[in-house]
Length: 390
Image (cartoon, rainbow, N blue to C red; front, side):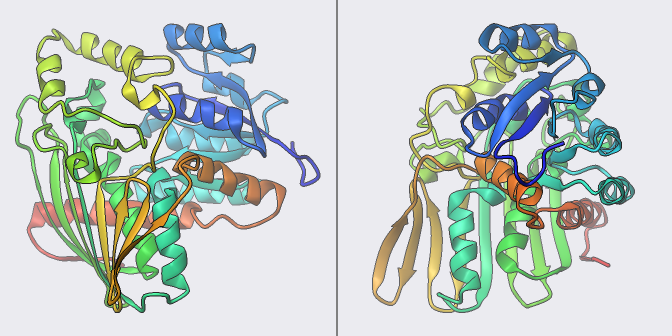
């Protein structure tokens, strides 16, 4: 185990899919952490990694977690494994970063938090977009009272999410498929971070617009906070409108993109059989694949769609390179370094917790409430009424 006198935390990556593939370069360049090895059941992804790095490569999560030269693990496995892999890591005394959603039930969230507490290991939940530099900057200035109190947040994101290649369970809401547990947590997490208040209630509407993708693909949610602030979160993954058009055609990873409306739908229609789709998901979006998410250096800020925050004395909007502030004096932009991203800040928080003893803000309790809010959104849409959180 690492102690606070050591400079670099040795982190293993469990799962080389989309999130794990993006975390690998982040760990390789992080000043306080180092990549200690990876694990994935997919032989092709393991071979790609072994080709690039002379680091341990395991075919099972258990084997990587049990290694003596691993201090912490980044769990980027399918949602149904988050609880078991977090509990396994805690049993081996390993610190944990777990991808969103933390879990699919509140009972699982509680079990994970309790296991980390018993083992006295750090637990950070990597809702990476609430770590984005622009969101962090707005949160910092808001907390300092620079613009007065927050009144409302408007968050919109329109993507091709539902037509990226998927495994079968990713199209089954009961197993955490669709947007409610994969995309809405980003909006909820960002809103909660900026509102700095418990969620009082939600009112939501969802829809399944394509019977061949039988899970919720769009959602509109109204989130009411105890302190009187409110957030409207709109997400659609149906690959028609692309809200990156409103963001200067900069993708969520901060990379330049060209408009490709409907391209993901058309590409998916050429596949035959669920196995072909699942295979393409692994090979194209996993580590070393052809996805634009992993190609090249990000020239701009990462983001999760468009965000406008209304404060007493200003409206504030995220931009490709920082934050635009609209106040009584006009408009000006706060520029932020393009080299920083949400994943780096996730690792920063893990390192601060383990090496400095600083309690993480995105801990199990914080992430549990995000899951609770998403479950309430699901219930509100089903019942067509407001749902009050307890």
